[in-house]
Amino acid sequence: MAPRILLCGDPLGRLNQLFKRVQSVSKSAGPFDALICVGQFFPDSPELLDEFMNYVEGRAQVPIPTYFTGDYGVSAPKILSATSKKTENQGFKMDGLVVAHNLFWLRGSGKFTLHGLSVAYLSGRESSDGQFGKYSQDDVDALRALADDSGVVDLFLTNEWPAGVTNRAAESDIPADVSDSSCCDFNVSELVKEVKPRYHIAGSMGVFYAREPYLNVDSSHVTRFLGLAQVGNKNKQKFLHALSPTPTSVMSPSELCAKPPNTTLCPYTLQEGAADSKKRSNDDASDSQYWRYDVSKRQKNGSDGEKLCFKFVCSGSCPRGESCHFQHNAEAREQCRRGVCLDLIIKGKCEKGPECSYKHEFQDLSVQRKPRSENANRSKECWFCLSSPSVESHLIVSVGESFYCALPKGSLVDDHILIIPIEHLPNTLALSPEGESELSRYQNGLRNCYKSQGNDAVFFELVSKRVSHANLQVVPVPSSRARLLPNIFSLAAEKLGFKLVTKKFSDSSEGRKYLQKEYDAALGLFYVELPDGTVLSHTLEENEVFPAQFGREVLAGLLKIPDRADWRNCKISQEEEAKLAEDFKKRFQEFDPCQ
Image (cartoon, rainbow, N blue to C red; front, side):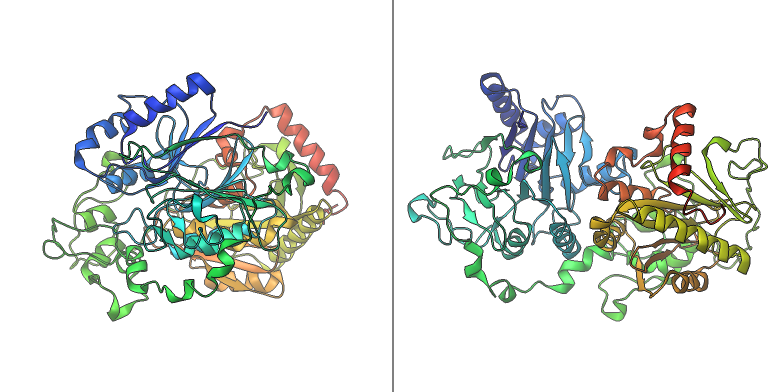
């Protein structure tokens, strides 16, 4: 049975009216599986804030799973900043961050599956002020990468209409006062040409418009554009629309390629070159990447109203140099290096409370720093040491001279493997020549094993003082999706506030040599080895708390299994684990270098 979806234009914080209408429609024509809102979701005036907050804070119930892209309006930055910090929202999530029960924020850009439907989205607007409500060029580029992925997108969500959507449309159907001069976006036009969705839903124009289907360039299916009005608009334009599309994944080719009699040519082929005339301001577009908080109360580092450069405080450098609009404060940088809470330095206070592990007093910079002990907090009992009574021996699938291979607890996929040093070593980047040689043989064996099943191997490791015994993780990815890996990892890193350095090598051994040179034992490193020889890496700052599950979370998103991003959600019985290990041993036997 096809999913039943409700689509809505700009709610503008009028959630009582919206959900009352949803419940009324559900009684007469429901039930519905989800509600998707495009256009401004938050109130446009403070008078509606109390009503809005009743749903955010749980005093009123959201009656149906509701997804929104319009992350701007009154109190949006405050509410969404708190949402981003929730435990359940940590990591790389494309299927919505939980704001409240049944309420999900589609942040940035992404692609996910909703009741069998492939949904892609671009959140925010091209031109809006503040940290939230603005999409970045990285969000646009990520969607372009996802558009290259196999499979047709069923629903494409944007806040603003695409420029030129009325080209080649019947003039009698075009709403009055609709033009490309407002609420239309050339970037959206370019994206929708590449994404080629079956349905494109947008808001922000304040009118209802169901355009005739149009043909896509180099594709056999048509696209239908649907513009929705604002909730509670005075002209009583339609703001709620029911849709029950059959997912592309279960449609026959003839069904997918059907063309209604009123189908037109693509409206955006008349727009060639128009987007180039609309230039983005590089300074305005990227300022939000360099600072995070407008400081109203400086405790030690400047006067009221100044903004510290976030990049400089965290890393000690800023690619903008003297052209940066924000303050490069060496004292603030040194306080960060000495372990002072970043929120305290930049905001003037820490909102994490006792959970924060950093210092909450500014340090005396006249006192020399003491070197840390390299062996501090070493675990007394290691799960990964073969001699340890805690080792899970039933998960082991191969044992060599320097390494062994095992399935992890709560594996992401069935053939998810860990390559683990037999000796108690903190990483795989400081090995003897013999150890490096055996590691290379294991990597090649796993590559060949996965390749025989139509997959490619992705290797990643977090090198950190918090990791006492190294484990190089290996996850198979379908070869057809491997080309998406660089963009997906880079996008995820950007969303979490750091960048991955990308290097391409002709063979894996050269990539390993590069990583060994980059590794700094005093700091740390996260790296990924991709199937095409590309190496992605990020050197950790001294006090940086890197998300331990980052690599797994990114691959869970790529493989469309976001519910398995947390290994604790994937626990199975010891008997089931043992069976998985035995099954993998059989598949790996002919490729195992230690057989």
